[in-house]
Length: 189
Image 1 (cartoon, rainbow, N blue to C red):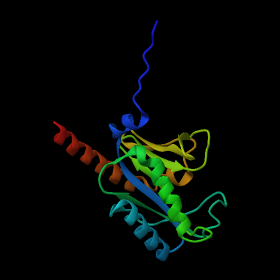
Image 2: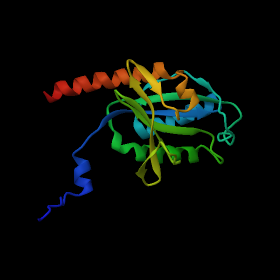
Image 3: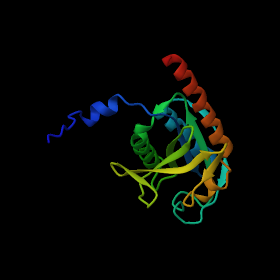
Image 4: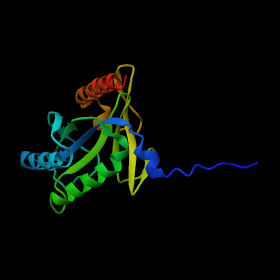
């Protein structure tokens, strides 16, 4: 028996596949000056934001973010147009570089990810049992899923995501994704 093995390279396979998502990023920051600096830096990377959330007071059960400031806020941005989810590692690399440029130690924390019709996925440089390794030191986590017309957490979901405080913003971005996918289907018909 002779088996045939595809000689199609990874590059040529991925070049023809586009998994459409909405790029979002969560930002932890201590004050409005650093929020503005971060928003401007991310705009240079990914274009003008399409949506911006209200600021949320952030509280953590750990001291992981103590290097930034004792009081932090979280705010989200989403960006225009559908993006390819395969770019998630590059988004995380760019976010880490921006964090480094904010100061030493870092003055902000930037968590890029994406929203589509079914989920919120966040990128991380830290491994854990529920994260999938993507390569190059980057992992992906399905943080929330959209099920039965609402965002649903998992047992590992960060408490601030699990309590629903960001759901209105995520739903707004999800609805943008749905609208852009409908327009995309019309163009392809």
